[in-house]
Image (cartoon, rainbow, N blue to C red; front, top):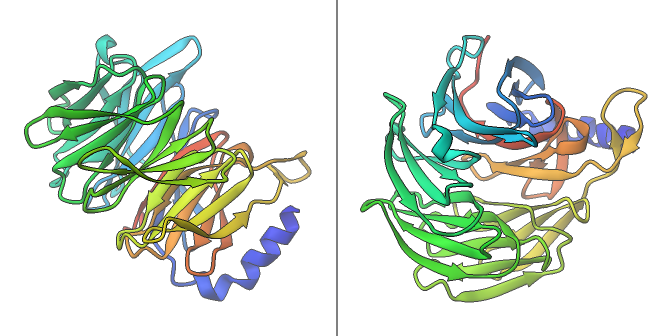
Amino acid sequence: MLSAILICAVAARAMTAAVTGTIVASNMNAHSVSIVDVATATTIATIQTGDGPHEVAISHDGKRAAVSIYGVSGSVGSSLVLIDLTAPTATPRIIELGAGNQRPHGMAFLPGDSALLVTGERAQRLLVVNLSNGAIDSSMVTGQATTHMVALSRDGTRAFTTNITAMSVSAVDVTSRRIRATFPVGARIEGLGITPDGREVWAGGNDSHTVYVLNGETGEVAHKIEGFGMPYRIGITPDAKTAVVSDPGDEKIHIVDVATHRVRSVIPVAAMSASEGGAVVNASPQGVTISRDGKTAFVTLKAVARVAVVDIATATITAMLPVGAGSDGVGYTPFVVKR
């Protein structure tokens, strides 16, 4: 199975030659972060972190990465790792959020890159962290259990969170630092995407096998896209034309047309081994990020320590990038990181 994918990747090398830049992947089981050059599939650096790094956010200038240290069972995380991608082998900066903000998870850089939105899952909060001094600038209480993922509109004025246990989405006015509304959605919604203008919010229902498309202003569920095993993570291209949905439940990656809310293509992810000669297992596609030109998606394959490079137009996996065990969150920058 693995050889077939690698042959496919080699055959498509000419098509992917133009894909450059760098990915940053969090490795939950290895307690590390991998920085990998996309064009050469070369690992630039591996950075050890605290227990259980989960999500990755990349600054607008592409030169910094933030990683949330969520923790593991028996070790609760409450910090962020801030990596200078212009000096990837330097010791990263650690920002401690404090015991009152345990289990940080979803993140997004605000315009200007001087502040970061961070969900505080246990505290049911959305934090604004000042990156110059590491202080918490604002703390917005959602009042919703398991505030997990966050998505931000392009202009930085509107954000949304999924609240897994509360079965809701919180709408946030970032400018005024207040929770604007709470939208009830459904059981165990987790994955989250937003069109750049903030008009549509896409939330994945893990148990209902459905992606809910909400009106970003009213919270009305305007569309339901069904037929997933588990729509775990959602990325939407900068031109708002295409959504990419990872589905570890069915071992697939779905390419969805945003205008029609219909699945355009389905990419089966073959079982493979995590290492040469290792046991063949389901790959488990999970984290999703999309290149700034909207042509390429990067999807972590958690069980096999790889990131799949997906050509969105052709709906094909064109390459595999090596990362660490338990790869989860992933970010992309067009900046080519050097050692």
